[in-house]
Image (cartoon, rainbow, N blue to C red; front, side):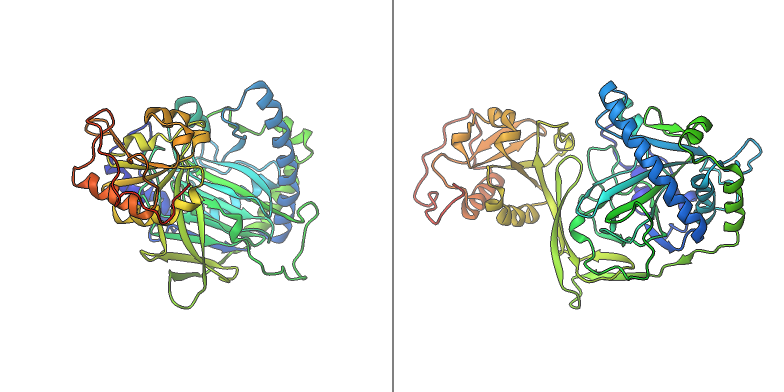
Amino acid sequence: AGVGLALLGQEVRGAAILEDHSSTWTAAGLNSTIARVQDNILPQDLFERVVEEVLVFEQYEKEERARHTQGGAYMHGKGGTFWRPLFNSKGEFLKPRFAIEAAIIRIYQADIAAGKHPRVDGAEWWVQKRGLGEDIGFHHDKDEGMASLKMTMKFPEVSTVTYLTDAGAPTIVFNQTTPDGNSHIPEVPETGFYSYARANRHLLFRGNLQHGVPAALAEQAVIPASRLVLRGTGGKRITFLINWWAVKPMAPNCQKVPTELAKKLKVYDKKGARHLLKNAQRHAPTPVVTQPVLVPDGTHDTRRHEIELPGGDLIWFDSPLALGSGAYSVAWGEEAIHGNIMRLDLVGQGPKGIFHDPRAKLLIFTSDETRVLPYLQAISKEHQSSLRGVLVTPSKNKDALSAFGLTERDLPTIGIHVTKPQEVKYLLKKGVKVTEKSLRKMVASFHAGKLTPIGGVAPPAADEDDLDQDGGDD
């Protein structure tokens, strides 16, 4: 089960509920792959009705979010999702009241089982409507109410995306999870899965994995003129999301749809929904063959992309160009993906993971990170087992500057912060420019035990070898 069951043996540094999802993953065809894709997941008549209804619910939720944000019902700016129980007390499917609920049953049957699975009780669903240039940041699906109210991570069994339009960037799923919301396993992904947007395409993947939508990877290909563009969908990337859960996620973020609300929104149609579901039973989705891609492989041109994970961790990865519109299992070679650098931000919620990392922190205090990134990337990769790179911009980290006795006039400079087994701080000698040479020399001196900590004996003045005159970061 890879990164999933591996968590059960990990030290948990924050609040988390770790479960064995292997039986559900096996039922969903995910025991030997992190994701899979099916086309034509719904018959066309049901698909078109779903598109009409999700646009209604998307507008309703947007209005509710605005109202609740003013009243404080949702925490941390999170939106709402809807809950649909799947079964009655006899284990029979509940009768659908509108097309979305008919689609949920049919997709469950395609994803999990023809009948009740012991680890799936219902569906959490919602809608994403984004402009083609909008990112959906990398994240883990989780019980958002529990995360906000109890500061505890809990994952769904399986996550899914049903694309309602042809437009936009692919969904990328990394083989990377978290035991506690504060760290990532593995620290840098080794493999991933790309699913490109195609109307009526359905992606399902293990529910504890990191995923997102980098807009920079959007296809440049023109949508064929023969493709149907439904009213209200033009120029947007619209997806219908379903997560399969053993237990309903917490309120207030996840709520059932009362029959009164369905009637108010004019989607309530029990007879029509049941007719659509009955017809859908004769429909068979088309499995999409996953194509393996090794990066680099010598046949695809690539482009490097940067993404920021929750907590500020940065990942740089090479992505093949012109892959097409299919589904791809991507494996990155050692030089094609790397991380071990984070962007510190003490103004926001704060990167809790860095305080638990036993490695020393190699901090670059600078207002212009583009100057230092090339050699910080190289050095943080070379010393990954002992150092973690940290970019510290003064506008978001005044407390960090104060902790090192710095002001903005002292920048750029370099610090090393040891937090375990006891706290020790080091600074680059005054008058030394920040260059690759000075950074490497400081790291070498640190490992050799030759640096003087802040508050210790004053370090000697910089000698001529320290004063690199070939240009710095100022």
